[in-house]
Image 1 (cartoon, rainbow, N blue to C red):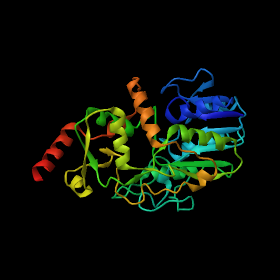
Image 2 (image 1 turned 60 degrees about the vertical axis):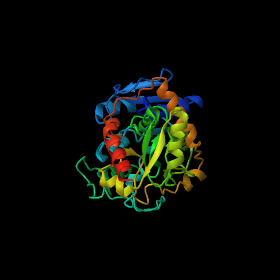
Image 3 (image 1 turned 90 degrees about the vertical axis):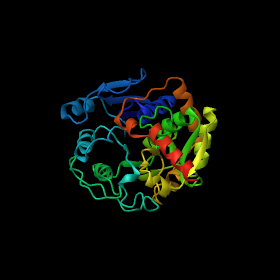
Image 4 (image 1 turned 120 degrees about the vertical axis):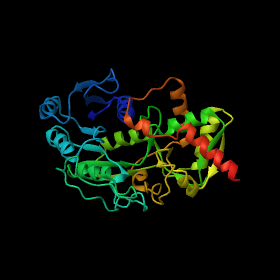
Length: 337
């Protein structure tokens, strides 16, 4: 099997490369050479996927049995289409990493692959779309929906929600682990039994590689089918860091009164009923296998303790509650009780 990975040097892209090499596949990667390091065992081609000349030079290195695209998250649809057109005759199949944000009902409704997708043309630029007053829909979702429209029936769309694991660059799980590692009272968003469905990066990678070799197309929601209670998730963070930390559960209304932002200041926390209600049944039937999230937590902590450093990314700084703000809230709650 001969594949091309757009990206391929960090987090999901790197995990996909590792998985393909483990299977004995021939791997080419294409990126700008600015983020992460090329894997020695691959044929690395450097260039900008928004430049026609670079894409034509890449196409001359083909053909491939499949392309796996992990590098389009920050691109407008027209640039996604540019790469799809340039490589159309050099690859039999395209596995495109998209997002659950393409659904018009996210994060309010339970999602299946038949849920309505946001409307965005494949030639849209970065100005297309909008973010709703309550954070839904998102301009990001519109842009990713337009990117999906750049392909024909041979494409496979993977629509993950949150991906965690070693090498994470967004900083959600690393923040919770580092916070647990500091010990003391830890502000926790109630209720403790709220289900979350993040998926391990290595499991997404294995599924993407599976789909590169498959023959069926269409979309797959990629989420943990069993999920995990938020309370169990946080207790696992405390247990693996082996500190004296303990959880202080606070109702969402009180957190809102203190100006705590959902999704960023307390990563993975969002009160919308559909945010963690993603049906991954079709992916499971196609072979998605998700390890227990306790394993993801354990391995991410081991990576951090081994001086794990993600590629620099601005989203890392967006996540986490400042210690002084957490301390003020905890003190206010204690004085009111």
